[in-house]
Length: 113
Length: 115
Image (cartoon, rainbow over all chains, first blue to last red; front, side):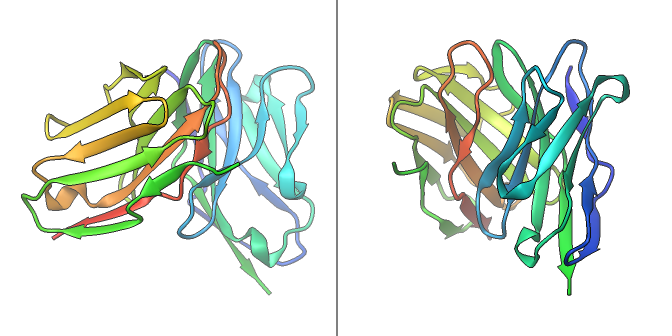
């Protein structure tokens, strides 16, 4: 069965600092990987996704993520965070031919001035 | 294009009452998902439909929960009778897939409080 672990429940970062959110997955074959963001009171919005090809993927709002098969990781990064990035971030894993996604428990990001 | 539309956005009801949550997926999307989000359990997939047919309902908690998709533009999630532990935010999501895993588009959710 596929699973996702987001080891950090809550991260606090200063505005302008760099950010890395961790995501580890468990799946036997090549996974489909996603990062979603949820602002308070809102639904989830896709930031970026990895299906195949280049292991460094670019997303919206200046985010990127790198797929590392050897480490079973798909960490999300941003070089300089903005106050508007404060939200909850979810990593998710799926597989070809199956529409079900398994979500991690999320990482809450707080931005301080 | 309009996104996924859910109603009601907020529902407060008393234990034992019937609750019906509604979802209109994005036009042209052929898969629809119902998720439940709580602090304790995170985001859980309850059920999903493909071309209006329920494919996997293994996440539905118990017989009190039921979901229908009578046509491509409408789905309901019903809880009868409701219990306080059903309090959560219920999300509907849709996608356009043809064998692969597609991006999920989420609605803004229905926050349910059962007193």
